Image (tube, rainbow, N blue to C red; front, top):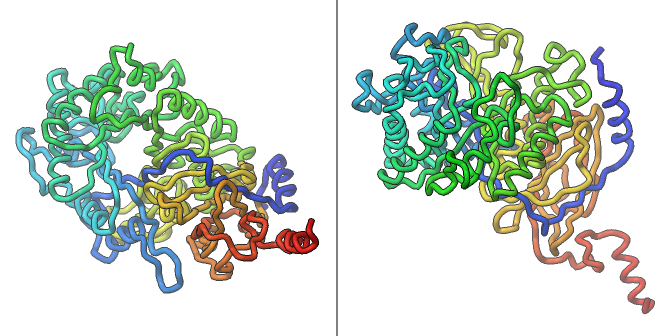
Length: 561
């Protein structure tokens, strides 16, 4: 029998017996949402290059489509951001790259001599970029894990010389910067919306060859040096692309440190945005006015989910900065039972347990960190070693593999299978579009029960509310609007659960009058509503609801009360 933690059981039992009233304050505004995304690491190249048209088109549709099928269900999750890996050229080195996993060796656009470009490289990544553009993805971020091997100090894309600083030759900062800007210029000229370049990734880690992927450590002064060079290159090439830094390994590195093991690249918000520091780059024209971090290592307990994010949000607000969550998957230890995860951890967790908890992490990043952008790490991965769906939106099976786990050669092609992770992300990404703004929501803030957040379109005509129900039973809520003279019309409900994949509920009334709304157990629900300024004729007391209080108001008026 599946064990539910005692603390969570008590809280959920109480929540399930009472109807919760959700109030949305349309006049209390928070962050503007830029986008929701995912990255093409590491298997995007393999899917785009080796899979047949049916499978790769299926992948593109699931990730990028905003259309609906005949049943009214979304055909894809409508990502508004696609993160593209600028590889360092380890693929051309083969085993000499010291990266054992061939799927994590990446091409660059430089020829082996390092002096000319070959735009026929990375065909699989370019195919996915093209389909993202066709589907109308609003933004593309180019991110780098390592400088091209021609510029590195070790001669490889991993830190094989065991240094603690950047794996970049001291005379190649301008070369690396010019490489990134040149690639951006090339794709902008082809019509791609290259909105950002992220030049470093998780600079706190050593990225030795044992890490089995491209990567480099960075000191804060080295990052500042590179960012200044990149700013100059973008200006020279007349690009308006912004620079996103520092892709910190977790939230705490923005405001302090974490352990004596990783002492480099700490207190990064102060390092880069304090004018008195030698590493200050906040005055550069191309620098994005914000900070990017990853949500790893801070999601195991409810206190971690709220504390680390609140601290980062407060520090960012003091400097007028935005926060970006640019990479997350369920990489580290299983969340605690006290936070609603199964007591048996990953061994006991189902695919929906993992996806549901991701919905909780997204909620906390949006509400407590106030992020303007949220991205999943690996859009594609093979399921291996009992890891279930911890590392992908779309499961990749090599041709000939049977079952869910896959260890075959992807260069022979394969199949694409959607996951509940994909559809839970879609509860946010498909409906909260760029430019939507989060508004205040109260009455659904139980991290072990029902939690919710709400978003309004730029023109004020649409309201999107996303609920995550961690409870083992159905919960009900009602919607009340305060702050503006609006009422809800055209309400639609989309549910992701163990049995539903962002499915549309046809049974809701067109005009919402305050009826209880069921949020199924262990599910993520998105409510999409049209907002109208005109008050319903029967809404006599102007509370945006038609109920018995309006009848009483009419009777009192007749009686002269």
